[in-house]
Picture 1 (cartoon, rainbow, N blue to C red):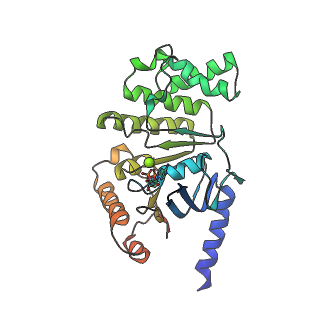
Picture 2 (picture 1 turned 120 degrees about the vertical axis):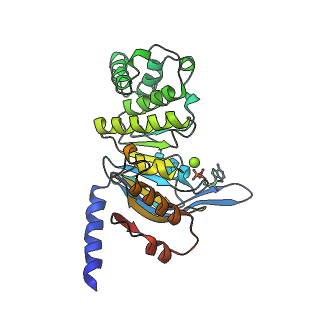
Length: 286
Ligand code: ADP
Ligand code: MG
């Protein structure tokens, strides 16, 4: 009876040694004078280098709050978040966030100036070097020809690409994306998912990606953490590296989507959820 437990302990300690970001038993709360809102309850997960790690759960389950905590904007009331073993207690240029609203691009700066801005503001690079870095990443997202354009002349998808280039240009240890394509029309959203995967193939950045779309989670992620409704607790973690945009509509893809749906929304306790898990590729079931 002891053997599986030992195995588990060993593999867990190896995973901890390699983890880029570890979220350990983290509870997050919002406190107002009137009340305390618990956004997540004792959430744990680990992100390894070059993971495309997805937080998936219904609206209000605390996904954005977890992402903000990883960025260092809010502190856990319980548990700890570590980046390469260092406690996260403030925002830093090693963690860059891409939000849903792309109209955050200052309209008076050109595309290139927008991408250069965080590099200059954080004193990561100066003038010419910042410009070269900006152009390099604009090229990667296919916007080199629009370097001198102003944001209002761009489509939604193009603004999304500028935001991604701006984040990648900082060469963060982890890129944090909060429903970055939610405001786009369905076709543009597909295209952006595809481009993000192509970019990942090329750059191999580490990604923490938030979505409430099961389909998007399966396409974008290699690992998906399923969170329960408010307050968010971990339901399960599944591997999804076998899927990409070409899998959409396929039998295996749809079956995975259905199972995830049941895991997310079925009433019932953890034992029931675990029973439902007959993925061959389950990593942890809580
Ligand atoms: P998600 O991103 O999964 O939709 P959020 O992380 O935005 O969820 O929110 C989690 C919970 O915390 C929700 O119940 C939400 O109403 C609450 N919440 C979010 N932001 C605040 C805030 N600034 N003050 C108080 N409660 C908040
Ligand atoms: Mg959110």
